[in-house]
Length: 340
Ligand SMILES: *[C@@H]1O[C@H](CO)[C@@H](O)[C@H](O)[C@H]1NC(C)=O
Ligand SMILES: *[C@@H]1O[C@H](CO)[C@@H](O)[C@H](O)[C@H]1NC(C)=O
Ligand SMILES: *[C@@H]1O[C@H](CO)[C@@H](O)[C@H](O)[C@H]1NC(C)=O
Ligand SMILES: *[C@@H]1O[C@H](CO)[C@@H](O)[C@H](O)[C@H]1NC(C)=O
Image 1 (cartoon, helix red, strand yellow):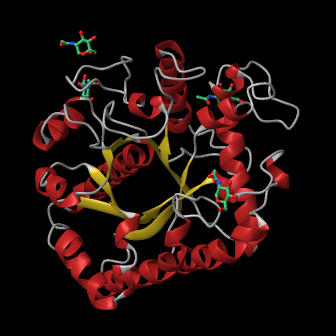
Image 2 (image 1 turned 135 degrees about the vertical axis):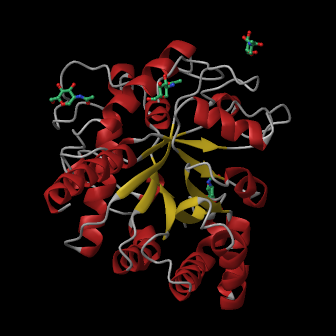
């Protein structure tokens, strides 16, 4: 038997390494449910599996999605909506939430991140009302996870939008705005203390439509041949690094990782929103995120990325483009023939 021992160890190591590579490189897709013509949750989980989509960001009501994920091997982000942040300021409520949604499922569902609040920001009129509730909610949910001894397995975090930044260009000049730094700094310090990543929603599409004169379509779509004057080959990397540089400036040396919790391109309803552009964006983004290129400031490894979103959602409010971010039609056929 002794002679075989090293062999088994070797095979075991290969399998482990392989799994870790798969884990790091898999592309996630955000499962939003704001439509009245979408497939059942069970069918959606089957659709993820059939397309080899190994990661899902879920939104409320997650109590409906969690049972369908049992035994699926899909790695999930549980999103806690902004409307629930205030109640989570009560530690008992945080315990209850963690028991119902994490402890009760964690044996059968691969819960990887809890995303406490989405795009809460003092300078975003749609979410600024939630600013006072975010840090207490994050702190309490983290404590509940730690009490359940799940702190190494389930990371507690929040998702930011790039509107928190003052300058984003060139990326090394980037910093948080003076009127957002007091809000975001203690949050980033809490994440650092718990070895949790920060999540950021990175949308080159909105960068492009916000300034189509200076931001060219090829730069936003990963098809520009030459890097821009700041050395960046595409807007996605420039935006992502601008968040990394802003974090460095806010808290000094750190190894906080950013998970791109949403990124996407609409197929109709506004400037540059075409099926062709969206197909290019998603295809190139997947290729880039899975490669070991990383970004100029954080090179050498894949970028954890979640595409927004699984389906076109006909009940979304706001700009017409909001309804057209899906990579699948509601009838479960693919819009762009993507390989995940
Ligand atoms: C999913 O992965 C399996 C195993 O690698 C492969 O055989 C299959 O063709 C893939 N399916 C799709 C839709 O990519
Ligand atoms: C947000 O609210 C501020 C203060 O009320 C106002 O000045 C600003 O125009 C609003 N911004 C948007 C985008 O509605
Ligand atoms: C990775 O970087 C190399 C060298 O800059 C570049 O040629 C290649 O296109 C990049 N690949 C992806 C998928 O980003
Ligand atoms: C699915 O829906 C799309 C968009 O409405 C349509 O173009 C396509 O033909 C449909 N496919 C099937 C198989 O029904």
